[in-house]
Amino acid sequence: MNLSIAQFTFGLHAGGQERVVADLATAFHSRGHKSLVCSVMFEGQLADELESINIPVQCLKLKKSYDLRGLFPVLRYLKENRVDVVISHGTIGSLIPRIAAVI
Image (cartoon, rainbow, N blue to C red; front, side, top):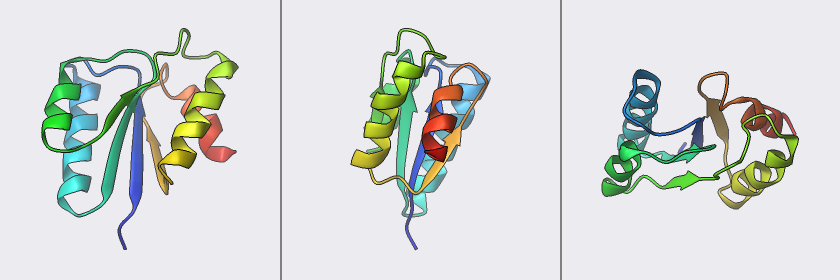
């Protein structure tokens, strides 16, 4: 069964947490799943790396990671991509995605 797996993070700069996101996305993709990465606030150099191996990356560019108005773009993203699994990384970039996943 192939799943649509979306990972959410604060940004995609080259750091430890971001490297985990990229490595997991690559592993999911190599196993035939639809792997998606969504940055809540900032893009970064890892976005280019992921897109070069056909893993879609989206940056929502929310003004604040904890603003509940950010629910609408996250919900739209989840619905448009028919996401089966949501993985959120970190505390700053994961509040809104966690709430959206429950909804």
